[in-house]
Length: 386
Ligand code: FEO
Image 1: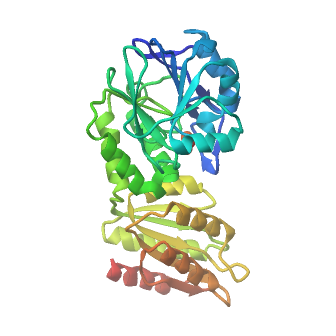
Image 2 (image 1 turned 90 degrees about the vertical axis):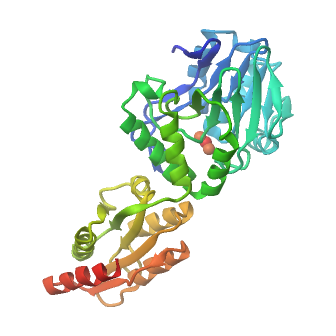
């Protein structure tokens, strides 16, 4: 377990979670990392820790550089346990360490671990001298939790951005130019879609707050460190947090006997005929977190469910609950589905779409099995609305 040098005296000492596939409901098919950073200066400083079960891995990396008992300062940028889980054991080893965090960080850590550690609360704009270097703290509330903050190291031009700009991506490489950029950007997109989409305004505020900083490296708390493609990831975040969409439709559905799937295909034809990009995502084949990655830049979201027991299918209900929580803005929605006799599902889907404040297209409802003429009519009628 080796540390990785970012710059002279600054090291990545985090943990790699190769096997995690379920991050509170988010399918992390490429695993993740929890990034902790060690700065060797007059005050030995650690920025964030790791999930509790990777504590030993972090300590082994730190111990290759310095005795962990000699850590003077620990910065907790974020309370969530993927970054604070190592604190209880670490605070028992680094007995003299001072723990720097935001006001909500202090109350949050106390509510998680019930320990009277040596807290020092920092305000946004505060600076901490650690010897030859200074750490500047910028609060970024709700990017991701109320306690979230980032830490900037001006002498080395490194931004420790915590959750923002991260990716769930387990690799032995540590930098963005060591892994194909398409993979890293896709995982960054999936991360934003599933973790930060709800917090678009706080993320835009955070981008503004760090906008004036000279940055040579962005060291997030998950995944790879950005040193070559900084402008690409910052520009992508600007677009995502502004809810910018393209002419693209995501068609999400489940089907019992194939009728709702046929309607989905008729809807697909309408978008294709209008030259609009389409992504078909049946919920038996696609995880809801992967659907959200496609939703991030799609103007149109079409959701279909047959009626099952006077309701929508549970797969569709699950996706809609997830979608409502992440609350994408500026979208156009369409509800569709087949039914046997009562047909509640289509109205229920439409109500959920209305709850997310989407512009709503005319819903499509077919009893039992649609015939060819009916499918063609669906395509033609929808084309007129696009
Ligand atoms: Fe990676 Fe909000 O924790």
